[in-house]
Length: 357
Image 1 (cartoon, one colour):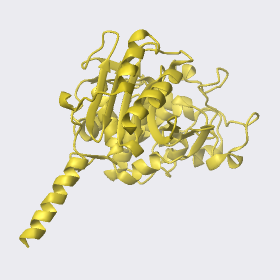
Image 2 (image 1 turned 45 degrees about the horizontal axis):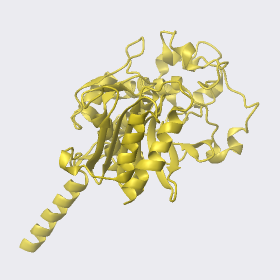
Image 3 (image 1 turned 180 degrees about the vertical axis):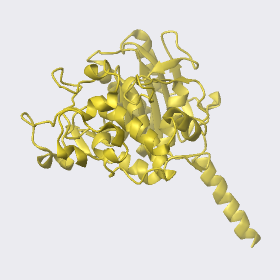
Image 4 (image 1 turned 45 degrees about the vertical axis):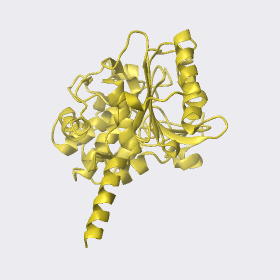
């Protein structure tokens, strides 16, 4: 019996270690030729406007560098990386029993905002998953300046959710229809849809979403210093724009790497994160999309599957399960067409080779 108790206690300690908070002690720093070269390349200006790079492996912070006057206390505008927050908070809401699943129709939660324009019975069949995968039938495309649903048209409207719901039904003149595309969905980058998910979850949980996030996500992870954005109506903005410290962003990546556990506590259901990081729509060759989260392979000699939060300027909170690694890259390289090329190169050419050793 005593041996059994000791064994169970040992297993518990191992489990807690596996899902413990990140170890930020400086003693974990490593000397790596690849990471030293990365630091030199950033300081030389090869990669423009990088403000921080953090890398953790096996739950230990191994590399932490700040640039252009930034430090551990600096907060970074993550732009559209914020979209993934809607996915994390929805997973928590499902785990808490406030929602059944992403297969529910959006108007179960948006009865107070039925479309006033472009009425169409097909809108009644739109699911939450359609918004999470950016593949709804609504004509919304931030990558097309002519789109009725382009985000720049949304921001000047007070009611963002009604802006989305009033959009017309999209056509597919220059691409295959959803049934003819991988995963049966036609991807169309839509910030308005990501913003609407916040209102849906807020209605479901019955309280302000920022307070829900504070209690169920930020609190357990000890994230205390941040700046949130809001819609004109006061709903948490999950389209973009919140600001966090780099170490706190790394906690979010590590939480996902830990399958939703933190210090032995279940924060986000593991099955939800598995669904969220499983391909649901094809963006382009080698890049898929889950639930407001990006999926692709990185690496030179060997490719590794990754999932990541992504934002304008090359922002990345990236997880490499095969290397038990989480990464944060922040920048101010906004609206530069090379921004994501820079951070992609940082991941493939420097970070992955360093973590493979």
